[in-house]
Length: 52
Image 1 (cartoon, rainbow, N blue to C red):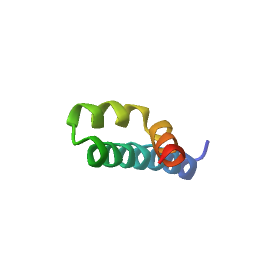
Image 2 (spheres, rainbow, N blue to C red):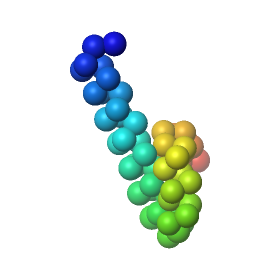
Image 3 (cartoon, helix red, strand yellow):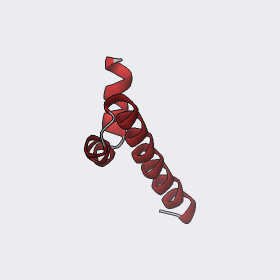
């Protein structure tokens, strides 16, 4: 992989983690759930969009 591809993948993973944590915290008001959903990253974001 070239350097730009690696950077894009890393930024996408980081953004997905942050987005999942923010969605989780605003929905559940729990730091524990936010950390757990941050680990799930884009899986939780997609789940949230589909179900809500």
